[in-house]
Image 1 (spheres, rainbow, N blue to C red):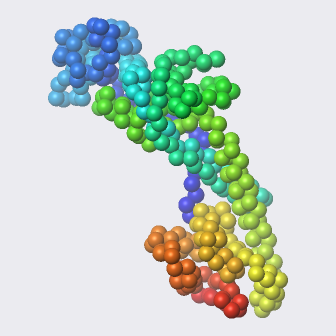
Image 2: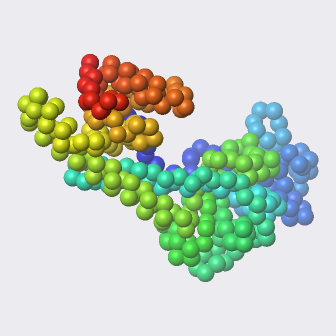
Image 3: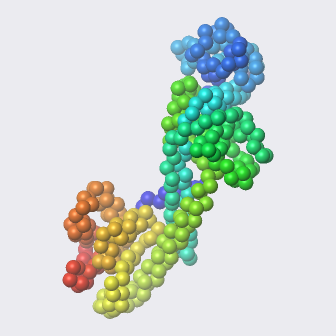
Length: 344
Ligand SMILES: [Zn+2]
């Protein structure tokens, strides 16, 4: 079964990054890439982190980088330079791709779990008026831009993701904020790659605060609750029908249901949710039970992947029943209202 799990765990910057910077400050104090300067000492550059002289290593053995002229340890040269370079690109640019906004809810009803997810896709947005290192209330934002007449805070994470304290402050401010996980950029990074990371990449970013998350979460929780309730109800019905003699189950329980749709099974799986949705779209009133649901749900997934033609509802219905009948025990109501039982 496919259970999506986004979790709330925050990824930490990976270890083992290059410790050598590929950006440094030239004599004019401008941030430059190692490919933009003369080789060796002639580059006349300084380390962004410690300010000491660096030389441009442009050999064939290792990736081009700036090395400190002295042997003094400078632990943060690469990160500090990358942080500055990303902010520089934000300052000079006008497009940023926003992250997908994903919320997930899980609800337990006794042992039964309902799980639902909502997602607003991110997109490329134009911005204006970029500013760096902006104090807003209690925080200093790496960058602030204006999109659609609203402020958008951009945090650039190179060494440390935004911590919980800052997250709380951002939520308090109610200003949309995103985090760019710049630590995902590797040692071959250059200006072009940073530009494309900011304006085009779908990966490496997430919302730190988005005012629409609350509403989406309410919707997801309502759906998760409904799924958990349905799961619990279905389980109760299963217990009841198992306790009854077979003939009585068939005659009695369907009679009492009339035209009601009953799907028994495991409601917490994506597949069963799809099954439910599929039937709501077509002829929900005709399907009564499908057991065992796990096997049936798996089959539904595979069947949907075949991309069956949406137009022909009748053949849709019949072909799905035929497939399901090979693995599950199904009851449904035919066109004449007669209850039909299909079993393996
Ligand atoms: Zn340094």
